Length: 279
Image 1 (cartoon, rainbow, N blue to C red):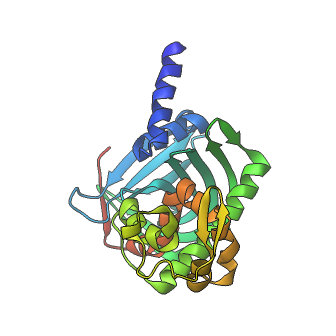
Image 2 (cartoon, one colour):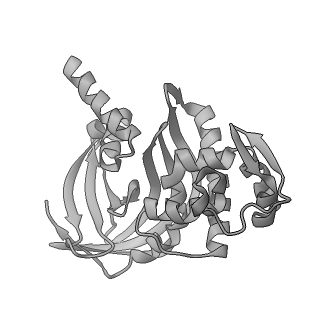
C-alpha cells in the first residue's frame, strides 16, 4: 500500500510540473480507466510522419469495443469513437481532456458529434466525413492546490471557462492566424499581446503603455484598463481587468492552445493519415 501511495505521489509531482505523458497516466489512475478497459490493437503513424497519430482499439468489461485516437502534438486530449460498422463508419462520441499546470490539473469529458470512415488491415486509414462538433461538457474535475472541485460545481466552472476560451481563441484567429508547433511557442507569441503586464518590458507591444493610460489593481497586478479597451472588444474588458483571463491562461493554457488549433487538428485527419499496426 505504501509503495502504491508513493508511486501516485511521484506521478502527481510530474503532473504539477506539466508533464503530459505522466499526466495521462495519473488521469487513468484517478478515473479508473486502467481497470475499465484493455487495449486490443494499436496503430501508429510512421516515425517521420507529421502529424503523428495513434489509434487504439479498446474493450471494456462488457466486451464492447471502441476507438481512441490521440495526436502526438496534442497529448492533452483523446478522441473517442464507436467501433466501425460493416461499412467502416465510425461515430465520434467524446473528447477526453487532461492537463497539468503549476496549480494542479484539469480533466473533463466533452460530448462531441461527427462521423468518419476507417479501414483496417496491417494498416489503418482514417478520414473524417462529417465535421466533429463539440456539444457540452458532461463531467469533469478541477484540482487546484489541495482543493478538488467535482460534480455540478466543476461542471459550472468548466462550462464557463470553455465559453471564455472559445471567445478568446475566436478573437485570436480573427486577428492573426499563426501555426504553432507547441504550447510554449503559442504562449511566447500571444502572452505578451494579451497579458503584457505579466511579461518583461522588452517583450511588451510597442508603445505600451501610453502616457495617459489608466490602471486598476486586481490580484496584485495593475491592469492597464486603457490597453484593454484599445485592444479587446467590450465583452473581454471585465474578464481581463479582473485577472480572470490570467487565471485561465495559467490554469488552462493547453486547453486554450487546443481550442486555437482545433480546425487544424480536424482538417489533418484525412485519407493521408495511414497508421501501421504495432500490436
